[in-house]
Length: 306
Length: 146
Image 1 (cartoon, chains in turn red, purple):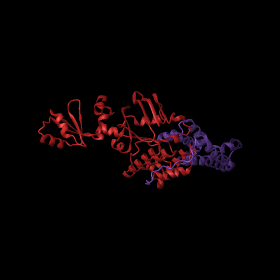
Image 2 (tube, rainbow over the protein chains, first blue to last red):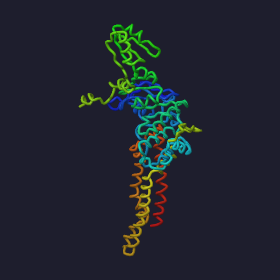
Image 3 (tube, rainbow over the protein chains, first blue to last red):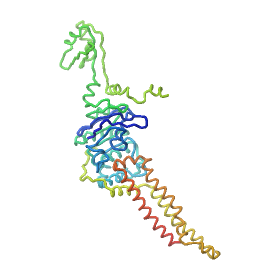
């Protein structure tokens, strides 16, 4: 469980995180979604106490991270930036971290096998590919059998097989009752992994909703129809898989039928149609729409800055 | 990656203690090459230079005046290498901290030990013991050999 209240972080005059309040619950995968530079990584650093918030507060399992006596058992974290000495072997890296908590060597070997680094465990971590580095980071996160797992862009650099493995792992961790908090800037990835979404842009909270609701609200495939004979049309279109909603401006929103089908029905009954617009917003578009005004590096902004 | 995705449970959970952090720092310091090289250099300098100086002094001993002879102090010769061997040791000392920051390892270290100071004490302790344990015998050996 991660609880943030009015969490705010300034770097100089730049506000990276702006009044974030949210709760990440156990037993489900919570996606942390936002464009690059929206403050996801900063938020995660604040959770771990690597940075001090300018204002507000964040706790993990009811306490500040630094007040936990055995932090690796509370939170396992994978940060986006690499946190490994390139000259040290993967095994020694994990061992050094394990030893701070008295975690046995056998656990280190167990995790090396789990993430599939067995053959390279004794090689220097600096020689690792991006994907291997990512697996080492995941092993680091899971070392202490933590009740909360927080991963920053975990699928970065993984091959398709690795991505599949990661999805299964996250689902499994949530099923075991752990709190799973995963950031990404890819909506499609989140749609597959997460149960709940926390969306931020420019450091501010934009949405805190279940994924199902987010998809329903944003990613629907509907046809917008305007007709002076809306009531007749509505009755004609009615069917088991069809829902027709009247909008405030007098138009109808029809789901379950294509624009062509609606046109045919209207034509057969000589009903006049003023507008027939398929509205197929994808998740990606919905996300873009939601965060567009918040994307940090827009062209206009850059021009303004020049 | 293996198909099995279940995370094996950890039987017992342990707390962070100063001793454990020290053990961790010991693992860190012994598992990088820079430690071996700089300590090797320190030991070679500590032992090698006095032997060289002693050899030079004794080969000229017959031609030295009594005054010059009284100027050649055995302890000075025996510790002639220490001045130089301080350099690789200082380099290593700096590296044990700066390498953590330059590689980003510090994030992992402070995630494991968020109270930070135990890491500093452990680094100081482990580093001091290690260098002391290596350089003291080296100096004694240098004294004996020269």
